[in-house]
Length: 618
Image (cartoon, rainbow, N blue to C red; front, side, top):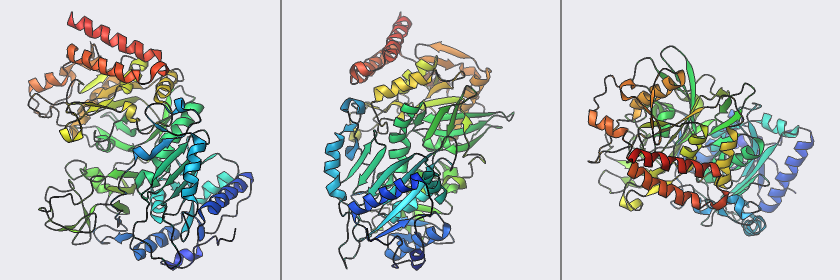
């Protein structure tokens, strides 16, 4: 088709000379070109730009968005090479209700996913994509999840008409022409297509944040494709993230014998310099980023960040599981990230950041709720309106974000892109009752049972019934690309693929007393729990059997310098059989949603739990 494969001059003239198709040969290149041509024929862009990932190209891309008004350049002294984007008010978050798993059979998607028949979904979205890029540029973005050429890495290509999405993908993945070369030589890759769904007519002025009221985020696991329409925001547009790295990758892991998990990844170094690697799965608002960037309060311990959100795990030839963080950046929630809660994250945001929907200060910097103890007297809020502390609304959107390279985190490990042997896996939820501060699984199968029951309690009437459990097994409920019962079975099967399995623990930083107080101080003090977990791995700490798992000997916890009342400490580890039997009933009801597909081993674990609880009552 007659489409120039470079950008015509518009806002940033330097970009016009870039964007040519790489001159690689090979059967894979022919297939890639044919696919790009197919999508271009469907979406009818004015131009095609093959993204190389060069600094010159990125600078021109950002300059162009500043000139167009899509980005605001922040003060270069306060926040060098950083920008603020404001989205449309109707395009501010991931859309679970518009996210579909289109497996050939409905039962393969399972009860926790929205399913649509693949052919019917294609018939639905094809007319939406037809002409959707008219008046815009089609960007071809080759990317690698994990370092380019790494043994655990995977490749993909995203087609998008959003320069904001391109800039975000360049932070969150490795965008490089070397990826195109590997594809040309025959490497496997995943196809992802994205359009904001806002075609431009000739001479029509663009809006600052193009999007469409109709939105779809569609996964075809059988053909390894993602199609996203209508949204320019976050995981709806950065398809390498939740769409590929979790939903599609979980399917690849099931089929290829590995696991794609919604987990942070850290290295813990004890006072003797011994290193341990820990992955942790926490639902949202459960302290995930704080643990990923933990600053221990106890002397001699340190924590190095390897990843803050996604971990891929594979059996290694040495009989152990090995893990990588497949992402290259952090896409974090800004509100609540502050100098008192996560100073490491704040220091990571010193430069080279793409902020979205936070507030703008009068001196050209950014602010959000929780960043500082003192609230500015005046701001421009996330919608571009004047704001003061008396405005009665948040200055930053509750889901406002920062996108930043992982490499510039002060806590990042020097070898953070390499695979590491996995020693422990943690599961956590936000539980005001029942769940102790830390409990160790009895074995791998029991650990899978713990992961399958992860939940958080609703804490306000506005969120639903007070105390109601919101299920999020393995923190993967919104991100598993296939039937979650089969996902549980895959975890059980993986227990037979390594001679030395990671030990599994459940943690809960959020237990409250009868008066509503948090019983545990959290944040950096969580290192005291990590200390006990590592000493368990070393065989240097004892544990006490309980109906729900192995609990610490309280006297062996390192609580030096921590003013924790004895009554609070006792309540942190209290296991009430009646409350747990009631919870077991809720677990059975949750399991029943999967019918006969649920692994029998998990029902056996539930029965064993009930038996231990009944014995404890006797």
